[in-house]
Image: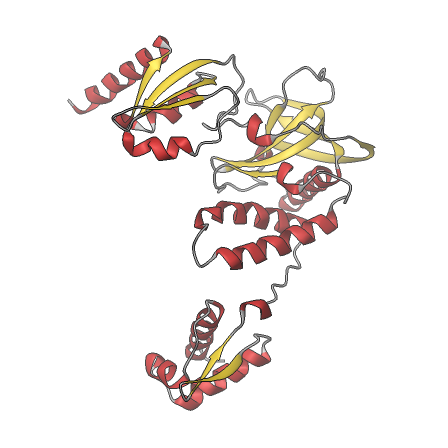
Length: 332
């Protein structure tokens, strides 16, 4: 097959899947080929499994694909299915566009295949897989045998879906390797990496859950005979606050005033219980909530620039003033 024919086939395929009715003479003119070439291309697409139909419209023979005829084959490894599920979650920003139906179909088929690999008695996938921000780093960037690293990642995913405990060898930020037996709750895509939210088996249930960077897991072993139950009250959205912080700390009351341009954005935030949002006459919005005022929260607030003003607490406001002066000093 020539390169030009490959380009034509992909051009036709994209339009047919997008719902465009293809009229061969127009397609031939657009691609600079003969009508016979386009007709042969349509036959080839049908032979390759694309359900191309034809119909008479205003005396012209057009070719199209019915949306319900499209069957998406998903025959991936478990790792591929997980990554696809997370990637599709990032595309939910296209809600309300022409991609809606197609994405819903693809998401449904991926979730069906994932459910086949998971214990049907277990909680829904939405509580086990969570997207907060797109990932970009490799999952198995340990620097040793890639095949072994990939196998460890596969074991992690199987334990997550089947609710089996995992024995992790983890490299902490101090460079120490430690062994942890954990109950894997949720796999989180966040700020360019993947993180496992889990309960450490050695810690009392009253202790906070821990967050493990997948890229720092040096080894992972399944404990198939050691199952656990995910608490009915577990809500990953509540665990990861709306500003994205994962580092622990003592929460305190924060009061922020957002500009009118950001009022709609703040109104749509998934905020914790007890949060108050007050619309002001000038269109701005006051947000009173509970947050851990660490570097993560500081960075989140700083990202809005002059569109947000910190009213409380005083130490956060002072820290922002100091940072702003440092920035100005760089350019004076």
